[in-house]
Amino acid sequence: MPHSIECDFNSHTLYVTDRSNHRIMSYPLIGNVLGTLIAGGNGGGLNRNQLSLPVAFHIDSLSNSLIIANTGGHNILRWVIGASNWTLIVGNSSGFPGNTSTELQSPTDVTLDPMGNIYVSDYNNHRIQFFLRDQSIGKTIVGITSISDNSSTVLNRPISLKLDNQLNLYIVDHYNNRVQKFVRY
Amino acid sequence: MGSTNGSTILGQANGISGSNLSDLSEPTGIQVDLNGNVYVVDKNNSRILFLEKGTLSGRIIAGNGKINFFQEFKKSL
Image 1 (spheres, rainbow over the protein chains, first blue to last red):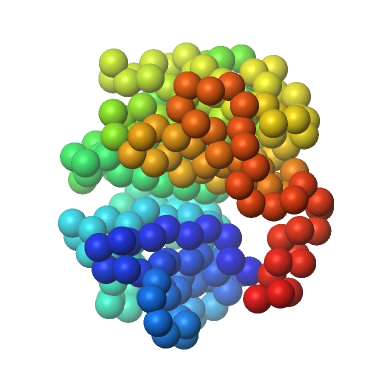
Image 2: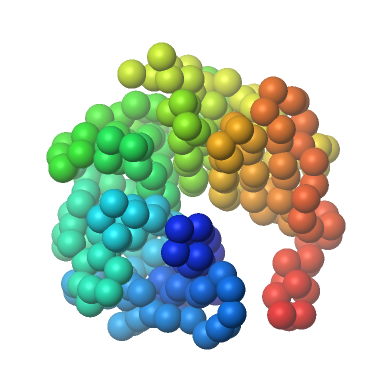
């Protein structure tokens, strides 16, 4: 079942998460309609050649890799295009959830800013975690860990996020049925 | 670095779901273009809403609001 897509307009490639098959496929935007397996595809699991319910991802052109929100593994992974294994970026490599500054609980989306810093929608912790480039200790920049309500500083299961080119942050606040914008200053 | 106080740009700030063009019902995905316009997957309303920057309600750019639209769309592929 396809879940999310991202386009790389430089290479004219469409990437699709095939969540229930635990894999990410690529399709050329022009021509051939056959897909190519990019990541996972070895059943759901926690081994380094497997994904677990990948929901969304970010195309990191600089490193020719996909940064994957591996929801069922409670971690964020890097999968270099053409590689057969992932490397851990954030979270527990053994697939355990948690709510400390180095852990995630069902992360559902990830995006990067131009400096390579990472933003994660940490769905079941009701927070947005920020990781400086190459660091695995996160800081909560929106929401309160394990608290959910509908006030303007709190989230209720943030499911998706994006930055605009001024680094304002947009969050799909799933159970609050709203899109929240957080201004950069 | 950024505000921790969010402003609601689409949907109701109090979290109530709905089906008007300023409402959402269990939204799941988002894209932002270079101009700051926003595209939202409004799952339970079976539609994609486009929100032009600075405006208060969306415009349906895909889906017909019927629950089974995307299932039917998938079958037609």
